[in-house]
Image (cartoon, rainbow, N blue to C red; front, side, top):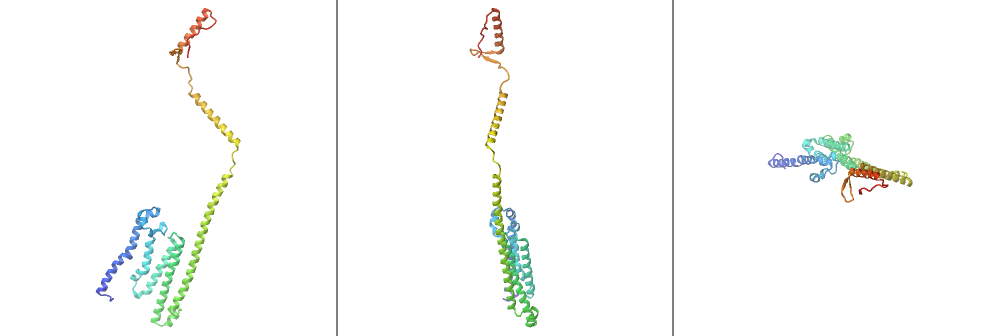
Length: 298
């Protein structure tokens, strides 16, 4: 491929189209769909959009639902954008920019810890990003060593870089990376042990709470049988008193205004009283010893 030709111009035009689709378009698309369902994600509501975009936010804490586009941008900066920002002659600046972006992203992971699982925070921050930083550091040392060797001499490069060859740089870096991985494994194991210990302590605390409540219920003194009987008698007496009071309030306080005669004819009470008085007077005048019988009152 010869630069500055018609074929090269066509390929550049096609590259710009794909650059707009993937390095620019995909992070923006991810961010757009995540912002569209941010309320449902934060409130943990299941909607068709949250289920369709679960691969973008299900691994993160709900407040950091937007982390996946940031992760994509960081990878694009290290692999693609750095080549567009700096020319090929500025290879050292390219590598330095990549190391800086990697370290900054690693610091953000350690500060925010966006993943739900704590081990993923350590693996993503210390594991992958540290390995990437070591790889770029190896490239930086090798590039500087080769530039010094080409411009001056290999002896001068050895005196400046304290390495005899690029392979020696790679070997030393591999040793440091291996030590870092051992430290990472130790930290991850420690986190797993701590999480298991916390879970067991929570279970023990819950069981102790249940036992404490049971002992508290058992320690309450039971009510004696005589006290129960006395309480029942008091309740029965109170009920009888209330019933008598209600009955007394409902009973009429005066004599009825009409009564029934023997034949069923209603007679006024005043008439009956008057008749009885007249009979008594008659009986006294006649000298009878017995009171004449008046009307039979039913």
